[in-house]
Image (cartoon, rainbow, N blue to C red; front, side, top):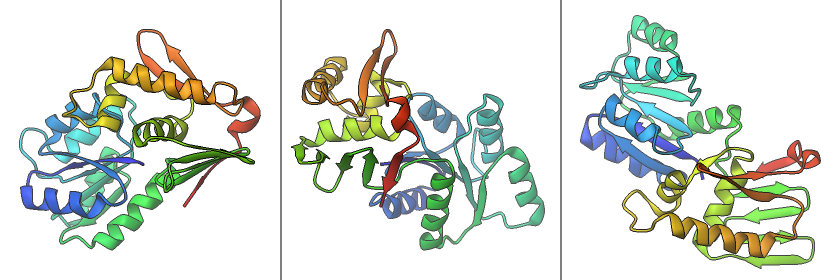
Length: 233
């Protein structure tokens, strides 16, 4: 499931937007650009929805900061500023889309889906890699006549890694994304779940979870399967 960061200083709008998106995405929130930057560098973020007018660091500065460090995460401005010059300035700063308040949340969902699709990010519920089908509705991983049902945390961890093959995730990122920011779990929890997945899928040639010493983990696919990885709705 894709992770979206909402950056909005007005609490009611922040909470309402988060509530509207939580059925389809993992949602994190920040009240200004400074908090957003802090979250961004601690967790994996797939898309940002940001207001322009915020204290401490506004939306323009937030996007410029991200782009300056070659962070290409898609950004949508969601703002009350509707003048042409504001839109021009927003796109010049490096945003990908611009919407004005009041928000049509159905339209916002369309735009999010389009940006994630263009970015190649999976926001759906099934992944197909060769003969392997990973289905988040049933928490199962199947291959031909073989099917394995996983506990939710193991499944979510595998689904996260499969959604971003060859991307390194730190243990802290995986803990936050799978167990939540307020979790009491620690690095040993990640190691235990990774080992369980390796025990269950160690002889499967379609994917492999490897340890990056001192950093975390990543999942790799055989070269012949990398171009055939399909995300399904």
